[in-house]
Length: 316
Image (cartoon, rainbow, N blue to C red; front, top):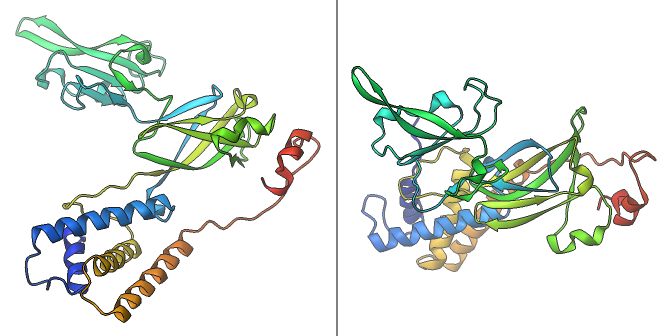
């Protein structure tokens, strides 16, 4: 299968907007302008939840009222896959003998394959071992409390790479199979809801780290499912491996943006491009929309006066 690249898309868009024939090379300044316009268009679609293919979900036990979610980030002295390594288990670490910097560190997400391991994360370092054939190097575990290591800039409670925005939050008791959707409230309004349970809030901490805040009553015995959007980034060499309707949408968006930025077409033609883009956006929006069955499962056992005051009976 021949996949379309960002370069292919820019060539198609420049040809359709009558800027450069596809048989001719695109000037460097025009190519850069088109790439910037395409990145802006994708950022707009990502921020409006139009890119369903970047949605991911994570599940975890609730241990505290506040849970940090995001990706691990190191201080400047550490560089991933150079002098710091991530691995799921101890045996998946790279061979210590092949690593140039013998002061390197590593983080394993589970020590279950270590004798006596309990499945918790662990920090590791390289140690030299003398053998009859000469020195060799091995990884050894040094800590069961990696959060205390001073090389972290971010150490989230729950790992979620490329997190851009939390869009849904569900909760259930550990012994239940039924998920309940929580309603989002802004951080500044969180405490005005009193003891209401079916709410959550998200407070961004950094560009790749957020705080998920739940009512205190959910601290123990509950499991949370968070649905979030990953950030979607491209460069000039990116190969698109996404559904075809999005490739058509991105191309139409870039054609329209180029026609507005570098006017070569008549006003009627630009309006036709705008109409086509709007139609494609609506088609994608309908195909990725969530169909909901609305019901009110309220009884004396799961509905309190605080829930009534917070408007749970009307879906607030």
